[in-house]
Image (cartoon, rainbow, N blue to C red):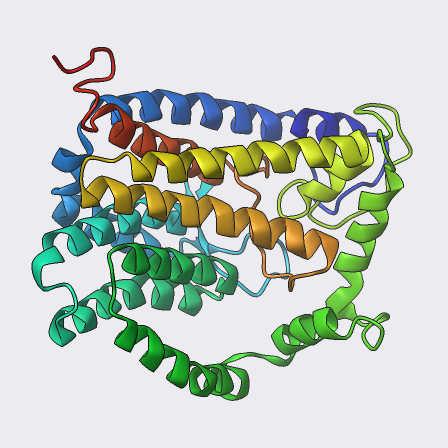
Length: 355
């Protein structure tokens, strides 16, 4: 998809980004590097490297904190987030690495406290653990990624067996939290993006729905089979190479291509859930649930905002959107699931069954 977009962007204005051959080459390199890392991670027993949380979690947090220094950069010109850092000639999004560190460390936290999991002090400690990455990325202005961290936290803590009394208490307090966020945190541009989903007719000409309107036009223009990967009359969509690449899939491959991509993502998510059920211990199950929550949430939010059913919050589509850090994280996360699979009760290593 990126190769097609780079070739076609040289002839017509499909996106507001200046794309060249380095974009898809970076993506291909990140995919191959992620594949290599995922094999290494799969061979390594997840129980062993999860215990090294005191190394990788502080390192990921420190890297994320660099976005608040002079190294911090915005993803797109004029964007209100500052979630990237410039390292030499490349830019990196540290929050992507923090996702993997959080999944591993939080799964290990839940596993180690299983005997007294629902103790109030332990629940408080778990909430602090989850609040750290959420708070950091919110300070960056990256609310979409903060939401992904929140869903990962909720998915793992639910899989770990949190008591219904805490769930009921959270349900009671959630309207207060939503009210506080709406009145004290969200800016008008964020509120309008949410309101435009609830009442698109009222905001039909507003800037908050401009990008979504263009993406829906592009998505539908491909009709059943699409305009083809090369030489079509493509519509303009801002950020078509990353957050809105699903609209380009619709243009080039049509409804059939979009359906095929959704089915592939769904099969990946279902397989991850299946591996969580066959895990030999709680730690493996929690890791798989965390990876599932990460991929599923980003897929739903990304495709939803392209179709206008969720607010535009700047979320990449796993394995598809441009971005070397995103591709690397998505691929390595599958390596974590493979490690759980191959080191479960049925398998001893990546290559041999237990006797």
